[in-house]
Amino acid sequence: MNIETKLFKWIGGKKWLKDKLNEKFTTITNKGGIKYYAEPFCGSLGSVIGSIETLQSGGVEKIYLNDINSVVINLYKLVRDNPNDLFEEFKKIELEHISFIPDNIFTLNKTKDKLQVKIGLSQSEKHYNRMRLRFNEIKKSSEDILECSAIFLFLMDRCFNAVYRENSRGLFNSPYGWNNNKLNLNNKKTAINEFSNFFKKFDVEFYNLNYLDFINLINEKQNETLFYFDPPYLNDSIKENNYSSDSFGLTEQNQLLDSIKGLNNIVYSNHDLPIFTEFFTTDKYQKEIIYRKNIISADNTDRSKGVAEILITSL
View 1 (tube, rainbow, N blue to C red):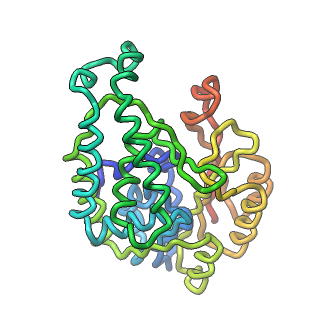
View 2: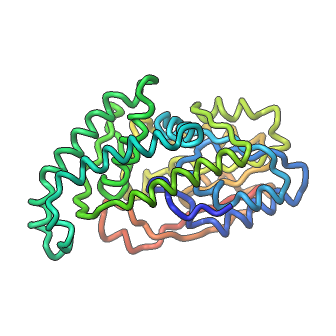
């Protein structure tokens, strides 16, 4: 089942790694006995969507997806259970946003006519900021999930570089992206429906837990489970931005590595740093170095460089 349209943009998504992940997942499922697939850090779901055929052919019967971001998990549940209402709520917000943009602004070149575009988008920026404020007011509420999910989709389309970023108080603070385009609402509706059908077709369960609690939840099935670990990358020596108020530094990275020690069927990705290469040194693991463009670096000079990432597979 192919999903061609993104539900939302997400920095760190693993669609670009599709072929490698399919290769690594096949290595594990070929051993036999795998019935479940689990992701403690599921993000935008690029990994599971890009490998669903491999997982199915490898014997996977049930999928467990978890993320600490409650907004993302609530969105997925809503997409699965109530896609039409979600789209209509999103459509209302997007059309209101467009109403603040003068028609002539849509025909301008964002780079060449930068000043004119920025002047023309001044009212739409204010609308974006109002939506961001409202999102931060309700994102922890269990009573406003529909509105919160629709605003989240809007913000991810309209924020700068599609970066979900929180400040130290846990408030989403990504600025306006200054894009003078009309979003294709038909594409958004298609994406919502495709994801909804995907969730309904496959046996998927969503969780909003701390990664350690999620691993413990699956622990009794661990010998029959393929785990893919794609945690927030360790950026201590990498010039990239931080996107959440929930720190995932050295302490958390080491805790995660400790929790992996007892698992037999894992694929793991992160930056290629000594903490990881030193941990995954035994004959139990296969290591591969891959490279990606650093498109989100805070330093423009780093964006064209290839960033080394490590991809680990248990043998």
